[in-house]
Amino acid sequence: MKIKLYPRSIDLCIREDNQLMADAIITREYVPFERAWQMTFIEVCERHQRKGVATKLYERAKEIAAEQGCRLLPHPDLLRDGFAFWMAMDRDALLEVLSHERSREIVEESGGDVEQFAQQLELLRSE
Image (cartoon, rainbow, N blue to C red; front, top):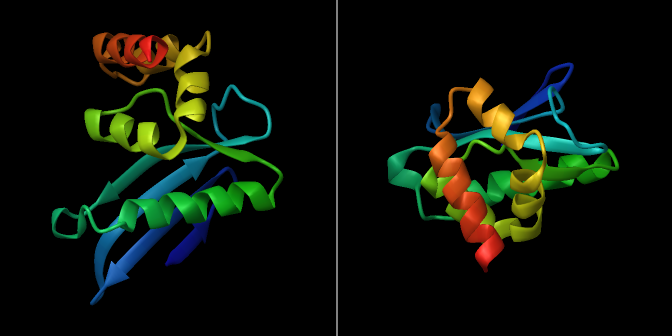
């Protein structure tokens, strides 16, 4: 796994045969939570999906956040697969982020699907 450090973000990528296999970005930019890194992007090439690659990126990102005395949280604008992933990995963090007073606004500002956001939050609260 290759890790690129930037002033307020970290890019974690996995390559195979010099081809990008998976990539994740965590950031502290625009995060409305203290002592937290937010996973704003994660993508795994189709042929490597369902093989634990996203979990490997998530676990390393969580370690990096913990090394800095922080926790890892999801971004509130999640596609269906991202929502399912966070439900499986850290439901409490997902609920905390989606319940935050600014999350709906963040989804709107990022051009996300506000209706999908509302459905995800409702699903989380009903369980």
